[in-house]
Amino acid sequence: MIHTLTLNPAVDKILYMKSYKKNTNNRVTRIVNSLGGKGTHVSMNLSQMGTESNAFGFAYGKNGKFILELLRKGNVNPEFIYADSMESRTCYLVVEDSGDSTLISEKGPMTTEEEILRLYSRMREKIQEGDYLILSGDSSNFADPLIYNKILEQMLGKKLKVFLDTSGEALKACIRKTPYLVKPNVEELSELVGMQLNTEEEITDAIRELEPYKIPVIAVSMGEKGSIVKMQDRMYRVSPPKVNVFNTIGCGDCFLAGLVYGIEMNFDQEQILRFATAVSASTAESPLSFGFEMERAMQLLPLIRIKEL
Image: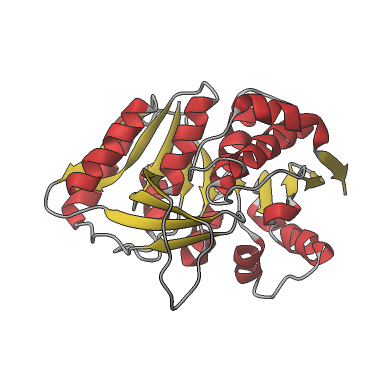
């Protein structure tokens, strides 16, 4: 079974407009309320791929009920800790006709120690030996920024495949637990190795610096330029196809979902990378902050270039 965790989910209020300009009146052409949160996005994308998942996290108030409703409608099983005492955050996504996207995020509520203990208990109960666990999202604004590390300590002995998509101190702490996969972007990898990475050669050297942690898959996302991925003892440069970009928010979450799906389905290495890149590129053509068209992704598959380094 696959499980995702979203510590600080949101309602994404997507504001569509011709263009966004500072210090002037901007007219919105359309507003859509959608689901926000990296882990929930992974779960929803996996559902579109035909794969079930449990989604763990915290949800509060009216927004929290809306988040849980969207997950259920998306055929995701929510295992959230819910309370009326606070309100889950709202994030504002400005999408321009040009394809440029601007995300404005609220900080979100402060989770209590009692709620965290309830989450630990629920995860221990629901997650079985050999399952997949996806820890996705920034934990720096959380009450305990090292909560991912503590969750992994709670899961000791279950022999989980852990997929990690976070940054900062959480990333530094969790890689010591030997996750199965980490997915930093270039900035996050730069922080992890303590130097600014400007070239592809520097990125591959930085990936090799992480060999002592024995992480089977390290996928470094580079936005529209694609990715550099180490899988076991091989290194790949993956170049995505050109697409009509609507907005880029959520592409990384779909890329991660595609990697998880390909690994679960026992695809070969290049198949995994090709599929994950195709669904991510399809997401860029979507007007929402998650989701993709499978038919479009299949059209993009042969346009992806993969080179072994």
